[in-house]
Length: 312
Image (tube, rainbow, N blue to C red; front, top):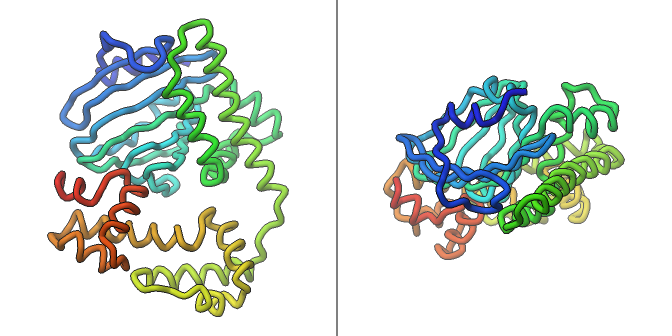
């Protein structure tokens, strides 16, 4: 694979005089018409670890994954703050989520203007994936991305802890080399363990999947209303305990979180495309308390409704 420094030159990043994070890595700065901020990167034998802290000035679209394939194979990103979408396959890019990118497949993503992209990622070189995923799990190379995509919603918290360890690391070489290698292996082991655990779970019966689909359709049409769980139990023809456990098994989130995300996504559209007062938007999506609405909006979108309006 090619030297990653060549790719950095292509994006016209400037080496910063004052390093951020661990001095074992390199810190770069950038300021162009689309984004500005800092980028830190550390290179290990079979991986890269990097940190993006960028302000997105204009909608930024990326669809050049072929460029990255000369340097690495797969990226697992822990997103601290971001507002965007990835469409191959569709993944919402929001705070406290994990974004997966297989560079050998078509990739298209968009970061929305007036937002912050702040995240920590593990970029795997082919050798590491071959040794620990393809050979150890006896998988075809084409199925490697499935291991990461199928587990991304279940490993957020442990990966978040690793990301914070990276952000707070001030070690120099050679201590940093040992530290970052252990982080890379922990990141991968958490992913593989979640994949193996999911394989050992009994699959959800088709009848239960269809029942949960009906529940989702009802929520999608009535998200702004207060929906009693007893009503959803009748729609699914399940007990409360089974409904909650089956829903979470399929969607990797609770019914409450699913409903909240629907409300916040609709509110985001209203904030960006209308001049309706924030208080009235909160009511429109089902919140009588503007404070509660603002807190949830910031949790899922990484910024407050007021900030969205300010930067509109």
